[in-house]
Image (cartoon, rainbow, N blue to C red):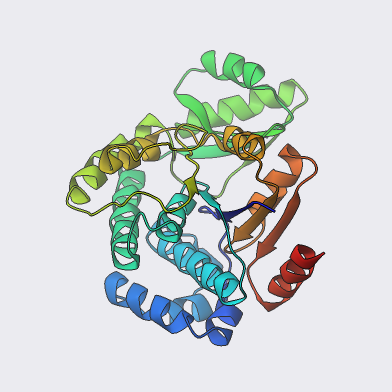
Length: 307
């Protein structure tokens, strides 16, 4: 069995996420204390009491999701679950960096704080939109967006049947209408920014400068990249890489296919919800695919892994 740990991205959050894991596992206290100190807020209180609307705000959603991903990682390790690879979807790459020793816990939380602030500021200054397009080929999507009156581009290649586009809100709305005329389904996402496009360049530039002094170590296991869609054989210039990561599409389908080609047969999503487990199911056949976000899913995962 070759196992990869997958980490959730922004949009997977929900009220009271991670609380069961926080209360059950001994390593949770260190994660919550470290994150709360660096973020300047009580993360356990936010997980317990923040509304869905509050959790959807970038400045809180990113550290909250990252925290729950680390709580799930800790729970998996306390239950003896091991891995030979890591990957994350967008924000999830930061949990993957911590899980593979690329960043310390302290620096990972600091990076999340700086990233969330830079991206929130860019979103406020440059309103945008995102939409999931269902059942279209990449060629069909490119053809539609090339004929729009404004800017839009692919942002997340999530599965063979789902690609997220992002851009100026009027252009995204125009694209949704065109896909509708083609009989294709579109779902506008509950965000007010065009993440993973050139509209995030101000955030990328600010973030790159702010993490220039961080210490990045070589990963201690296979590390799969959103930016390239495959395994990183050598660690790139990480401030440059993470800045490009903010404005470039997430090549998650390519990542999943690369993992399976490398012999990985067990995919464990760590963090809130089961978005990535769904993408694995739509993309790969013949693999073990589980998620861990609370006590119930932990027990199910342990049973599946033993079976």
